[in-house]
Image 1 (cartoon, rainbow, N blue to C red):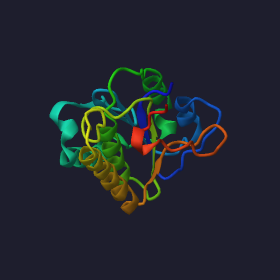
Image 2 (tube, helix red, strand yellow):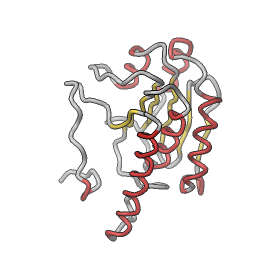
Image 3 (spheres, rainbow, N blue to C red):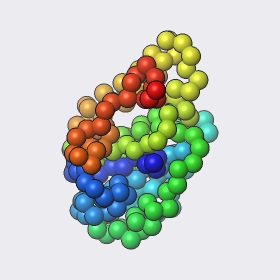
Amino acid sequence: LVDEMTVLEQGVPFTGNTQHPRESLISAHRTVKPGIVTFNGDVTVIGDAMSDPQTISGDKLNDFDYLMTNGKDTASKRMLKTVKETAAKLQKKLMAIEETGPTALGPAVLTSIAMAAEGKPGSTVVICTDGLANVGLGAFDEAKTDKQIAEIEVFYERVGQFAEFQGLKHGPPPTRSGRDPPRPDRKTHGARR
């Protein structure tokens, strides 16, 4: 079970290895400026772990413009130190993450990509989740019609295009074998049968 988090690594691609994702973040790239974002029913921006986390909740989870602007602004305040400078605090914050309840995947991804867009060219967004997006923008749980599903897909496409335009790398982390994991089935929104 992978805890729900989105991880930004400025300027260095994520490299899959046999360590737990939390441990590999600390040891793999000590010179990058991390921007950790966790999510469940809310989105929590930990950044480089040097300041108090910011929690995004309620109606803000459905506000594209707020999430984009806040993500950009947050990068300049919460992504200042390198992993080497913040390793102890990062380790403590990462090890405290627990999987709980709902999944605000869309708002977390948008926040993370907006933060990474303020970093170095080639910054990477790594997304780890164990759940179906069911809170805020991009939530699939209430989508019943093809039109509703199409609107959600437009949201993710818009976020992906922004990331691509900014020169960001994004997607699921490689598996331990180093290969990309299989993509989720779009018709079942990632659910396996």
